[in-house]
Length: 329
Ligand code: NDP
Image (cartoon, rainbow, N blue to C red; front, side, top):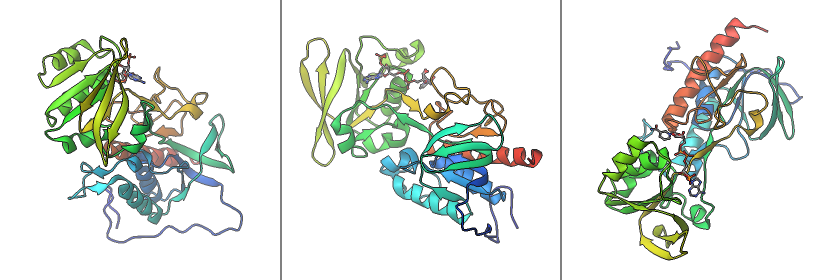
């Protein structure tokens, strides 16, 4: 018995015919293997569609660069980001989804079947879910790599609670930086907002809220130019862009909030994107090409959470099921 919300009492394993030749034709191909892609895989396979995930060469999305995840429901004591993604992958494979760790280099959505090209293979399918996510912009400092998950973060909602009663830095001057700095004052004893100009790009209302917050100290015309620590972040080195003068700020964390890049380069000529490169959607998960859907951070620049990405993956898969039922060829 299967229920619409995913509960089941009997597991029916999906069986595909075994052939010698490598299988390249699927009902659905999902591009990307973060929470959106895996959830879409689970739902597509449970709807009995022959489903392939092309995961890229570093599967798991942004959560593989995270340490502890406390805000994904179902894990009472939290879970490490990489463990969560391995668990999602195993669950998806158990439902019957084929997962191949290969990177998509081109797509052809002009005719059906759609064609998806990797460096080693050409695949065909009747429907596509794009779940390639977005990448936080980096400062380009060696310390970002060294202290990733050890004080350097790209998501205040995810990691803010780990910095209770500590001083922290937020870098950036847009809406994200101001929103994150304001949010982080719930936990931090002080937030140092470091911006490379002397005025913010953020909306006026958000600026006013930040200026009136006693816990936020602004460092204008400044950049973080080095990150120092032993096991975790201990010092942010600030450089005054005009004078070059350096200041060492003792902090426990550095939140980089200088924007995201949606991973849409390979779709520029095939799918309608907005002015920032995010996929434009209508009617929830539909792109401008019938049969091509999108889920997660690749279109969502507002919520950007693992749980919302998973939710969008579920929605896209339900829409794909409806599309494939109505379009048999
Ligand atoms: P933005 O591109 O708007 O802002 C990025 C900020 O980071 C800018 O202040 C920019 O500086 C700075 N920056 C960029 N690169 C560097 C760098 N290498 N070193 C230091 N600083 C750098 O990105 P956001 O993520 O803030 O916002 C993206 C979109 O999402 C916007 O449209 C925004 O309005 C929207 N948004 C809306 C929210 C809301 O309404 N609640 C919340 C969050 C985002 P500079 O100003 O000098 O270019």
